[in-house]
Image 1: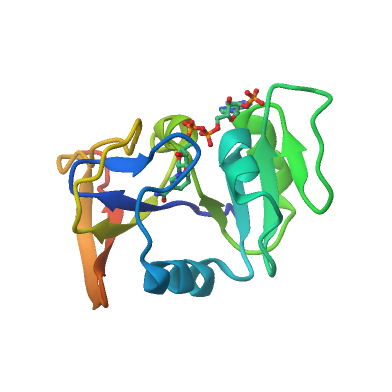
Image 2: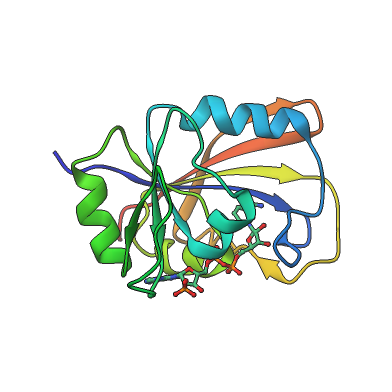
Length: 160
Ligand SMILES: NC(=O)c1ccc[n+]([C@@H]2O[C@H](COP(=O)([O-])OP(=O)(O)OC[C@H]3O[C@@H](n4cnc5c(N)ncnc54)[C@H](OP(=O)(O)O)[C@@H]3O)[C@@H](O)[C@H]2O)c1
């Protein structure tokens, strides 16, 4: 069975997702919910995002995208293209969760069937942005309120 490709991101009101290597806010409940949502699944993330986290996230398989054939880190897999990451992920646990950052979201949004976005009610400075959700192609299917943020589920609309 083909696995779903799901983008999971925390996005500020102005579209910012990062500033330099960091996420420019601290919403502990969001991190907890990210863990709950992603446990038992396979994360695909860019090398910059992986290095800013600095370790494999427990309870999940991590595939790091890098074009550097010499790159490796203990406890994670690597892939040199998004297609190669999808092939690796197809034999890993759970669904395929694209976990950032900006470059990787921009590439993966065209292939995803679902986006799960934590809306952060802030407008921080930043230099990494999430691609705007095109509501001609995506529909909001669910919304849940948490302390300090709302989580929104989008599904890709069938092609007319
Ligand atoms: N708010 C959130 O939910 C969230 C989530 C994740 C990250 N972030 C933020 O996003 C920012 C990082 O985003 P970013 O765009 O700078 O970097 P990124 O997407 O994390 O990583 C970019 C790197 O990934 C590799 N890469 C990307 N596409 C590839 C492909 N198709 N094939 C092979 N390798 C590929 C390249 O690594 P090489 O240079 O090694 O070739 C590239 O330099 C940080 O600020 C981080 O905190 C925010």
